Length: 296
Ligand SMILES: [Mn+2]
Image (cartoon, rainbow, N blue to C red; front, side, top):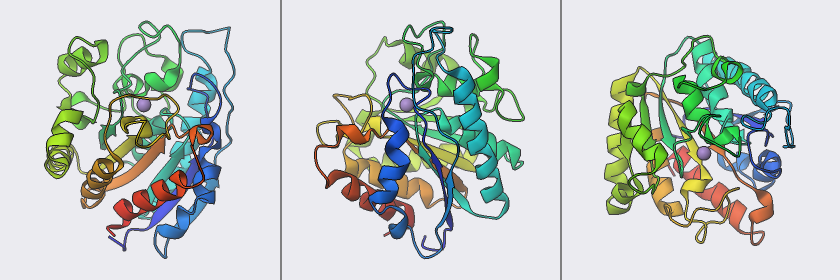
């Protein structure tokens, strides 16, 4: 896997979050040594213009939608430029809506990718179902073009919707039965690999996700929200989740997905540097992540 040529794109934006903080993650990941660990041929495409969260009283149910769309569009440009040069984009968020940019960038490069959505929740809310109005809980809903989603965010790519349900794998959450998003996953017919399946055998769970993604499209991308991790084990996320995967389970998952010849790119989202308990966790995370991405 050392042959994979990564192009890092920073997206320092918390536009879709509840509060500021995660816009500082790309700089923190660079300072933690992530790029040095990504092989000899890593390239840094720099940061897109960022946005620090602020309240959006003009549209409380879909806050900062214009900024979310602008950031995603700028990410899409740099992702497309990397893909057409045969490189693998690694998008450093930023909030989860940067993945709209990853998928839209694939579309701008002429691909119709599948998406493996590794996240503590599948981000299937819409402005109608999310009172907080934080768009980072609505990214996948916008890529699927669900009713009630905002045209400026759903329309970042050349195609609307960007994704069809048969090209989506929802991976790693611990949502209880009866949960709104979990019911939507079933209703939409998305492939579902819950946390329990990963705990039982992370390699097997990842192989199932990979095989569905490989069968769904010529290429696929991966979204990795660190809130899929158990917050007590790895307190990185903007929004703490009590249940979750271990860092080791996430690493096994990412390594399996990135090893696929159909893998096209990855986003890493929702790291809040203010939540780090010490100076050790982020370098350790960067090392584990880079190991998974380079097959080491
Ligand atoms: Mn998320």
